[in-house]
Amino acid sequence: MTQDATIKSLIETRLNDAFAPQALSVIDESHHHHGHAGWREGGETHFRVKVTAEAFRGLSRVDTHRRINAALADAFDRGLHALAIEAKAP
Image (cartoon, rainbow, N blue to C red; front, side, top):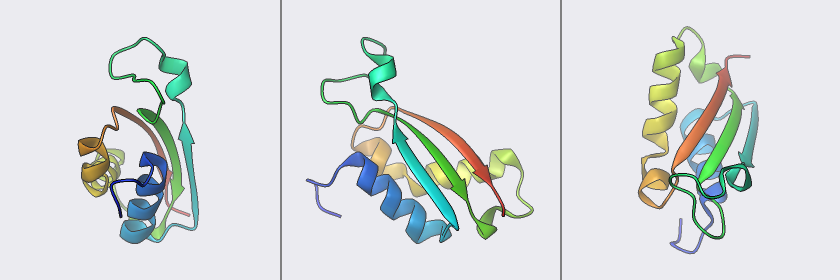
């Protein structure tokens, strides 16, 4: 992943690589947070992910969120400020 890649594409790549989801939606909600903490011009700071993956079967919500956040560590390092997670097993 190059430095020039968008945060959205980085999120998609990391989640696909880590969990091989059956369904994945990555939504940039930054425009809803204009002027709030972490927001910056150009967006790509606040995202919602909706992900369905067999990898989440049997995991608690906390464990699922921890795994997703760990998979996205470099996205947070590159400016991702907030992540809303909707995750489930198929």
